[in-house]
Image (cartoon, rainbow, N blue to C red; front, side, top):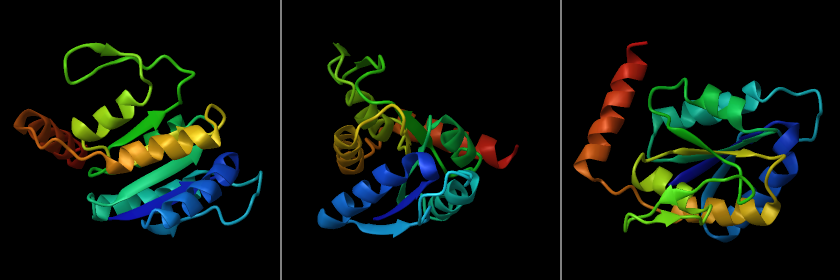
Length: 167
C-alpha cells in the first residue's frame, strides 16, 4: 500500500512529521505537497493530486491536512472512488458505538470504524485542532485497520461509487 500526503500551509509541519513517522514504519510514502511553507498557497493544488491517485487505486491511502480538514475532505470526495473522513482529535465529541454495541468515548474508535465499515481511503485532519501526537496515533490506527468486508458495508460502498460516477 502506498500512502499519499497532501496539505497547504496550515498542515505543513504536521505533514512533514507524519511523513517521517510513516517512512520509519515502512510505508511507501509519496508527498504531493506542499513542499515548503507558504501562507499564500491553496489546498486545492495539493489535495487534488492525492485524491486523483487514490481514485485511480482505491486500495492505496491518502492523508491530507488543512486548517479545518473539511474543505479538503469535500474536495477529495468529489472523486468517485474516494471516501474521505475528517478527524478532529480527542477534543471534539466523537462518541461511537463499538463492535459490542456499546457506546465508546474513545475518540479513536471513529477512525477504526471509518475503515471497518466504510473502507475510507483518505483521512483528513483539521490541523488547527490536533496535535502531532494525535495525528501520529490516529494515522497509525487508521492505516492498520482493515475493511471488514461485510456484505452490507460493501454493498453501500458500491452504491456510493455508482452514485458519484453518475453525478
